[in-house]
Every structure is written in C-alpha cells, then in structure tokens.
Length: 426
Image 1 (tube, helix red, strand yellow):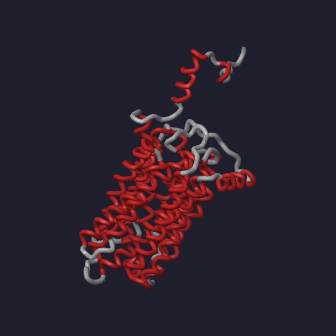
Image 2 (tube, rainbow, N blue to C red):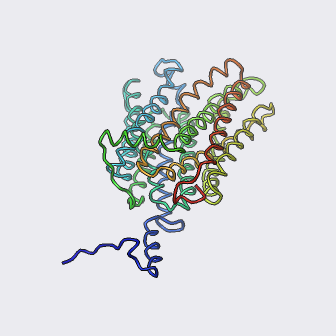
Image 3 (cartoon, rainbow, N blue to C red):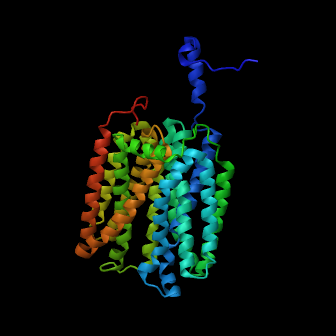
C-alpha cells in the first residue's frame, strides 16, 4: 500500500494552484467564523483573569499595612514581587511553550494562578502571602508570554491586529475590574474573602478558556536544548526590527505606569484635595484603552502598523500635555487621551512582534513582555525622583522624554523594509 504524498508547489498544475493556496489559507482562523469568536473570547477571558489577579491587591495595601504592622514600602511587595516573578517567568515559559505547545501552557498557568490566589487568602503569615504572590506572578507568565504567540500563529495575518486588540482589551478590563472589585469588597468583608472571590472568578475564567480555545493547528515544536534557546534569543536581537519593538515596550509601559503612579499624589494635594476613593475611581479611564486596543488594532490591519504606531504616541503626548493644566476636567480628558493612545500603541507593537519574528515566536513574545514589565518597574520607580525634584512638571518632563524616545523608535520602525512575504501592512 503506497502512502499519499502531497505534491510540491512546482509540481501542481497551474489550473490547480489556486485550490492549493485556498487549502493552505484554511489553516488560519478567519474573522467572522465561530473559531475566531471562540478564540478572541477565550483570550479575552485569559487576559481579564491575568490582570485582575495581578492588580487586585493594590487597594488592599493600606489595610495590609495595618493588619501586619508593616510600612507602605513593605506592603507594596504584594504587587512588586508578583510583577517581578512574572518578568522572570516570561523568559522561561515562552521557550517551554515552543517545546510542548501553546494551549497546555496557558491553561496550566491560569488554573495555577487562580488556585494560588485562593491559597494566599488562607496563609497565616505575611511571608506566606508573599510566597503565594510570587507563585502567582510566575504562573501568570505562562499566559502573558504565550497568548500573543498563539494569536500570531493561529489568526489570519489580515485580522491579527483586531484579535490582539481584543485580547489587550481584556487585559485592560481585568486590571480595572480587579482594582474596583477588591476596592469595594474590602469595605464590607475581609481582604481574605475578597481574595477568595477574585480567585473564584479567575477559576471560572480558566475553565472557560480551557473549554473554548481552539487547539493549535500551526504550532511546530522546537528543541529546548540550551544552545537552541541561546540561538533563538540571539537571532531576535540580530533582527533589524525586533530590538526596536522591545525598546518600544519598555518606554511605553514606563511612561504609562509613571503617570498613574503619581497622578494620585497630585490630585490629593492642593488645589484639588480630592478624596482617595474618588482618585481610585479614576481607573475607569481604562475604558478608553479597552476601546482603543481593538479599534487601533483593526485600523493597523488596514493602514499598516508603520503608519499607526507613531500616531498613537503623538496622542499620548497630547494627553500628557493636557494634564499640565489646572482645571480638573482638562486633567481627566488628558488622562483619557493618554490611556487611549497607550493601549492603541501597545496593541500595534505587540501584534507586530508576531509578524516580525519568523522563528521562536514564543521567545520573541517573552522578550517583548519582559521589556514591558521591566519598563513598568524601572521607569515607574525612577519617576519618583522627578516627582520629588519638580512635582508634576518633573513627571511630565520625565514621561515626555520617554515618549520622545518612543516616537523616534516608531519612526525608525516605519522606515524598515518589510520582511519577504509580509505585505505592506506590517
């Protein structure tokens, strides 16, 4: 019995080549199909759970300081230890997914993070809580590192910007909802109960993700040999565009986190003297990011990432400029525009990674997100120096410098020649 062998491209008669191309195109998930809806819904749930679990602890920090008799810096470890472990985990889980597959890593990551969150609510000591938060950050790296790679492999290239934007929209809703849910709950129940609620919601999201996400069809296993991993990393840094995208992630996230780290200090002081509860509610400006991540991602699919990325950074600069004025409505509008531009820029840059990396896509996504969270940690903390030296004007100077770097990088990316076969919209 002979085994059927697919004909090589040059062996296919010209009249039948169109059928072969159509058949190959079917390996991608097309917009408007049930598989596309399942994919974006699953990744939306995954992004929601990831950022809700990560940032739900921010409103609890003063309460934790009182309960454990620790200062504000020690209390902040409940967030920073998770984001730190997430950044480190990104360099590990991406390569693991290159070996064993995308979906298994993401499913395990979500279930582990949800269960560790519920376990953290039952820890008898502060150090036990921190240990669980470290495990949560490490677990969440499994979805953060792999989700972009999965989308870039499975979604049709013409629709990847929209799909990536919807995923990032889930991130924005999760980050906002995690803060709001726990911020409200701890006024009525203990922080332990609030953590159990968030963990339970994340567990439901993990189950939905596992059930509806389509299996990978374009995944090809890659060796986990150390030399192979090193070759993958060095290959990405030899590319003309990928290091620029890594730098873009660093400065954009650094600018975004710095603004939201210190805007509260400004609004609590004169001439505003706002209450802390109202300052916390300003996280609803994330809603503009939820809209822009999908809208700008779809626009990038049509007009090209080269044209759209630098435009979103200009929007961020305009929003930043508005925050320098004294009237509160102008400050809030500035925050909205700044947030709109940031999530749009992140949507475009992150989807560009999948188009630019031709091999070891998991490692490329890991490096992008490592830079993203490194920018959050380093620039977010460095902004404090400018706050103490120059108040809000110092913050605007620092963020403005970061955004100028981001704009120059975007213009440099726009001048790069497209990769063979990538099309004009890369």
